[in-house]
Image (cartoon, rainbow, N blue to C red; front, side, top):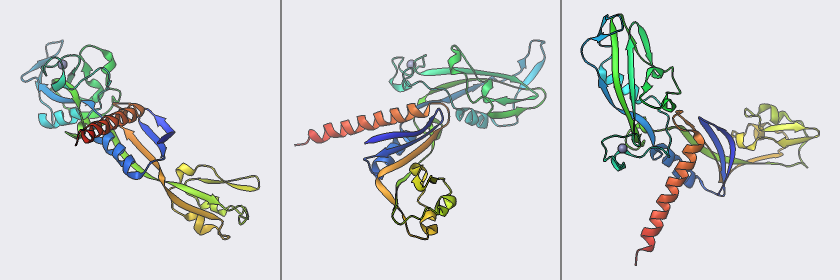
Length: 277
Ligand SMILES: [Zn+2]
């Protein structure tokens, strides 16, 4: 199996995987959706009773939304995740009580009138866990309303809840095998104009396949070509795979982690099978 990177940004990846089949790529897709872990807020404590500011003005600890809805919105905020730094709480040496190896604590202290954003979550301790996507609106506070909250983030996987799913919009399709018969081609190149993905281009006195990875097999070029010089077929051994992340983990790290989880799983299966009589 070979992987060619077409696009790789912190939140987006597109790769062409060759010497493979769609079933295996689907296994990668399912693994990065359900099994690659990330940090997410799982516990939120609300301060009850009046909240005082510096000038001793009292605010009511209330917001227009139910506390449950505020907690739910906080839980969906992407929390920066470092795989090497954190372990699952239930497997941690602290015995699940919560420590810097398995939890991140955040505080949120806002007084109305204002809009509370994800960036208002302040990590207790290191600034490296500041929320990168800081303009996600959580709730609007009116006059005399305030929110004082302590939230705990921990590691989990999308298999348990979607808030622990770093990958979004993962999908794959066949890579196209595009053949241009140069004996038949009259280099009229109307086929290049109808292609919605700019796959084909005219270079000098020749029609070239410039971006085969962009082809979505729509066959507009085949229909347009009057001399029947283009053939487009799906290649079942080559798959274009793309996905995005919510920003909590870099796309490259998600892919590497997903492949390593899949490798461990196959290794486990191999051991189980070889142990059979
Ligand atoms: Zn711990």
